Length: 143
Image 1 (tube, helix red, strand yellow):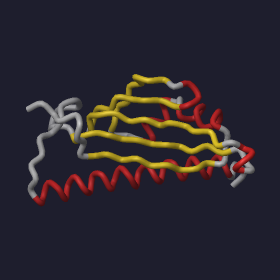
Image 2 (tube, helix red, strand yellow; image 1 turned 45 degrees about the horizontal axis):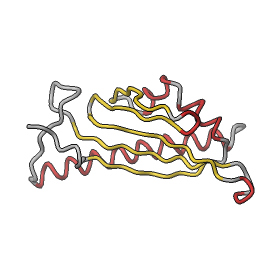
Image 3 (spheres, helix red, strand yellow; image 1 turned 90 degrees about the vertical axis):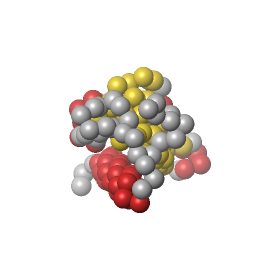
């Protein structure tokens, strides 16, 4: 069965403001070692490098799809401090058992829908912990 690439079971969009320059954020986001820490069950391959504006990845592993971090600099005149909006997107489907690239077929059973909900929630919480830790380290470097 061919996966429906217009419909992803895991579809996350998040925006977080970090009071730090975009250059400080992109330097961290470009470190591949960070990707393994942030998403240990996923393999990421860059398919779109937007320079200081972020990266786009294809995702494989426990999920298959795409992800993106887009950095939007906030005008210091209006924000008072240098700030960046970190836009995060993850659009993916769980993979079949034994495969890192083939989407799992999911029925609409209540049990499977609960599984997908828990999986989505786990990825949201994991991302929020990641971005808040990044925020803390950049906004309070001496703590």
